[in-house]
Length: 298
Image (tube, rainbow, N blue to C red; front, side):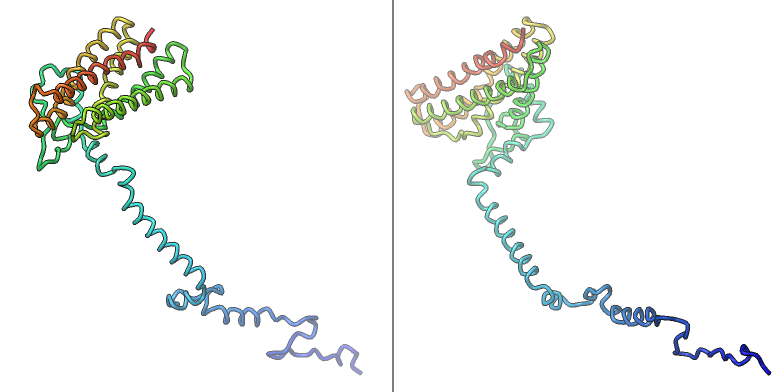
């Protein structure tokens, strides 16, 4: 008689049937197949790369309309700025005053220190327009005055530091004082030209350029004062003051050129006023050069 173990039948698992000893059905494979099949066309739930722009616009119309509107506003703003920037900042004119090269800068510095042998002071014109400074050493520029002013402030800071008197407030006062005196000079000359009814092609930028050349001599005087004391300061500053006095004849020629064009007699009353004005401007340069530098050398 067979035992109880011989009568037990082990069920044979058939394809598609679950294991009788398994408590829960394994549905992970079926779900993964179904999930993968659903996501395959879109790729991670996003629209496929081959979707047309019309379909992308329809998918998110609000953000696309905002982007288009912002781009339109940016283009209109750029166009408005380009049209009106010259009304406030003469960019085109400023480009002319910075049209310099290394050769021009070297010649101009030599002219500022040694103007006594220079003969031709006439500014060259081409079709009633002055040529760029790099082609004419007599033409005014803003590159040298701007760099000279910055260098002057740095040298002033160096001089104050060597005397243990440096402070940011004092250096700022030095820079603001130089700018204030330059502004007063320009305003005084413009007012004088208006009072004597002088018609000239001199612009405010021309005046800033001519009056800004004195910073070159001021730098030389302060540096020599730091190296050789008061004697070096007075010698170099005196030479530079005399040089800038002679150099201002360029400004005189620009004013007198308009007088010649108007047919004003050389010894006329109005022409004498022009001469006195240029002489006053030339005489003011050495005084300001000394006033802005004498306290930096001890």
